[in-house]
Amino acid sequence: MPRTRSVATATATAAAHAATATAHAARATATAATSLDRRAFLAVTGAVTLSAGIGYALGPGAGSGNAAPAGRATVPRSRQAPAAPLAPYRGGTTLLTAAAARGTSGYRRLGEGPAWGRVVRGDLAAAKPGREGRRTALAAFVQFTDLHLVDVQHPLRYEYLRAQTASAWRPQESLSVAGAVALVERVNSLRGAPATGAPLHCVVTTGDNTDNNSRGELDWFLKVMSGGRITPNTGDPRHYEGVQDSGLKLYWHPDDVLRDADKRLGFPRLHGFLDAAIREVNSPGLGLPWYSTVGNHDALPGGCWAPKDPYFTEFAVGGRKLMALDEQRGAALWKAVKKGRDPKGDHFKELLKSESRHMRNVTPDESRAPFTPAEYIRAHLDPVHKGRGPVGHGYTQENLAAATQYYSFRISDDVLGISLDTTDPGGHYEGSLGTGQLRWLERELAANERRAGGPSYVIVLSHHTSKTMRNLRHDPARPGEARHGGDEILALLGRHRSVLAWVNGHSHKNAITPHRTPHGSFWEVSTASHIDFPQLARVVEISDNHDGTVSLFTTLIESAAPHRTDFADLSQTGLAALYRELSFNAPGAKPTLGGEAGDRNTELILKKG
Image 1 (cartoon, rainbow, N blue to C red):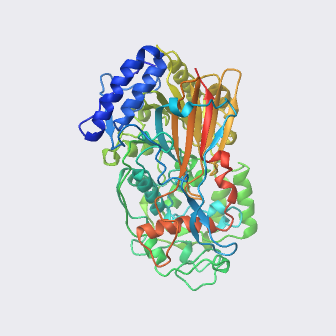
Image 2 (cartoon, one colour; image 1 turned 120 degrees about the horizontal axis):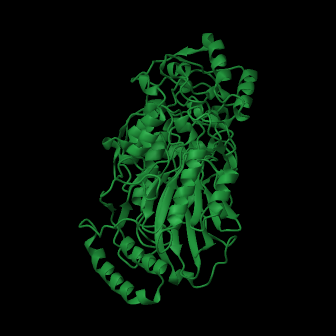
Image 3 (cartoon, rainbow, N blue to C red; image 1 turned 30 degrees about the vertical axis):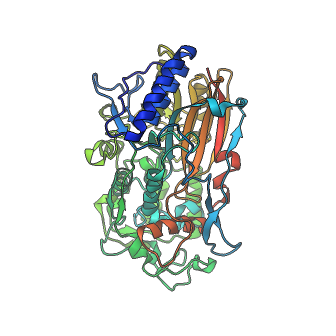
């Protein structure tokens, strides 16, 4: 697999103790090269590079869709790595322990629970003996998905639909920023990949980075990922103005003696909780390059209504908020949303207008305004949010000029990443691709497979799963363009043997699905959210087994927050721990989101040439 760009050598920042090991490995590689084919040779040299601790941020445009400016230099991103030989690093992963509940009823405290073992899945190819001693690491990255950083005081939120859907309001939501920072801290603590020990190349998000499509939430997300100080508060800077101090029994009131619905289930009274929840949080930022993918909550008001409605924009920044709604009216609204009958939000708009006399006063705030796709890209391109790079986190000036939010990039020399935009600007929370993007994806895959010496392997990234891409409404900005659903995407990916996996989120559930076609096979890896329990992210590793198969390892990680909580600890770390425990106890939480054993820590075998 010849490289499309030159790969920088290990920089002076690489650990001195790794240099000798790297030199020995390089000599061994040169000696063995005559007995290896081109793919195997480059796989071995890739392992040498990994052992030196280099994570590459080669930027977007590795394929034909977003070509980099001519002459642009490759930028290495170094981080400390274990000295060769590499060894699996399981610290901080669910291979060692995972949060588990104590007791059997009421509000249940969390503690350390049993590990989740690794399951070898041979649905698509048989696992051959001895591969552990032959395999070579090709790439390793971390997937974040559905962080849902929430402005819990945002006027457009529909918390009053809690009785209809548990996702309308969660008792842990006010701690989403602290929880996300603890996840960043976890990734920064990993000294290598869990299966191969290789250094991690990057972190990728697969959408719903924000919850309410608001500028304030976008700023919080970028600072969580790249580093900075975040005050997760809007409106009145002095105190909280949301549903948790409304006096309405529908919501948990942590600071109040009110016998609300959640306290009746055992939720605690935590004096000072709301003040702590809106206090400044400090993120160290990821120690790795990171890339961003857009989700429906990033692009659509409420995650489901078509954007650019001036009424919703005005309401978002205004001083009125609806906190309670007749249950019958709420049921009708949610049914319309769930069935996709109100993609433009016309029914929702009329409901808000009719309920104006029941609204409560809140402090207006311009930071709650929705951001446009162009503003989303510009914010990523802002150098203040560069962190460990790359500038734009996948997005480029070309995306801005073309009004697109999809791109390709190098996860490693041997693995190409393709990030899609599966949101439908026509409205509704399910997704699809427009014809323009579908054709671009076809070109990217075809160009990759025409590379002299053989194609790179491909990981496709998106927010929506194949089963939730059924929304074929036309994009208002491209009214003549058709939309294409999950079945068409599966068929396209199945025609290209270089595709290893389609990695996505949206469903908030761990699920790993094999896909076999007459032309090839690949895995669909869907990962649970970080807002609903069990609040996970996933490490994905690719290795060549040098026996005609490739192994795709998936390992789930929790945030760095301790499993055990202390109700008296309202520090940033204490709040991150509470974030997890509250999510476990949230009324309506689905215990199946963690998936089965074969959806968690796995080795997925593929037959690849």
